[in-house]
Length: 131
Image (tube, rainbow, N blue to C red; front, top):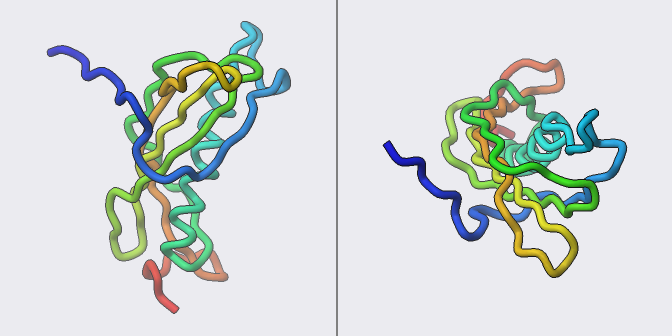
């Protein structure tokens, strides 16, 4: 079965933008996958929190795949799109795109599905959007 090529442009709403810095690299000089994943998690949490109208926690990450390295100085932009809403949970599709300065064409570097759960003040699950 042939692998599907990445989309030519981002899908979803812009949720976060950051510059990859030297402190975010591994021993090979590539940006840590964990740093990239944390940017995606922060962006996805914005979408989930706005929908839940409460605190949210990340409970799962599905289908994460890294397709291209991120270099120091790249601008990393995350886009998120709500996939599904359950009683207490939300699935958010998140893509990370990178470009090197303004002249470079952005490229998708990773994507994944993040699951968030709405929680109350005591940290217990609560219905999404409940007042």
